[in-house]
Image 1 (spheres, one colour):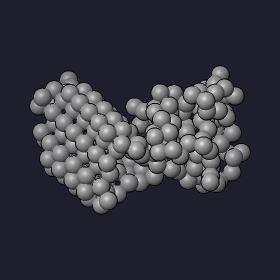
Image 2 (cartoon, one colour):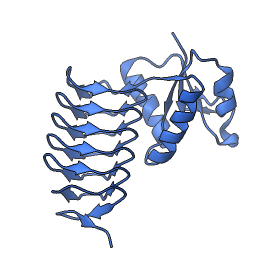
Image 3 (cartoon, one colour):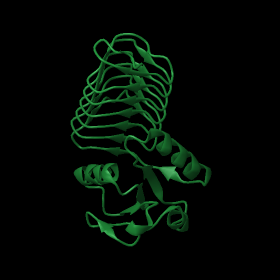
Image 4 (spheres, one colour):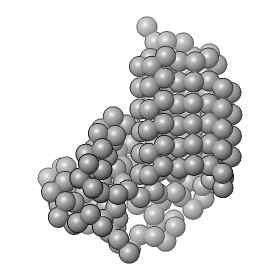
Length: 208
């Protein structure tokens, strides 16, 4: 069994560790983190081995999951750096999550408890799906997307890469959200959102 490295020992890293505990797949797991003060410590009975240099010393058989929560741009950049160094990635899917047999999931993706990923949906690489999320049929979340607790994506929704959807938001059927857009908490999105746009409200409108 290859060693699993959770990169980031903060809040989302601890969530990933909890997900692995839910599946019983946590024996060969360590944290890595750029915070030097954490190096050599234990968090939730799991060692923090160091930063990038420590991960490199483990060899390319180690698998990594970059566990930055709402820092999706940082998550993507670090994952790309690790991929360029030849590292592979693992997924963390909570035991209580439901993922359709016809859904497609990339690498380095996190799906937390009580979430649903419907038929023919696609989650790209390094996506974060937090707890109690519903992603309906034929929806797509592109690279590095962040879908926070209680979000609903209706059928045929497409989230571009690096999109952030705030807690409790709803995106209605067939809506496309452009790259890097931000949807505020509790918003109801009824129409397409351009790239790099922040929207809030019900119905959601661009933030001025």
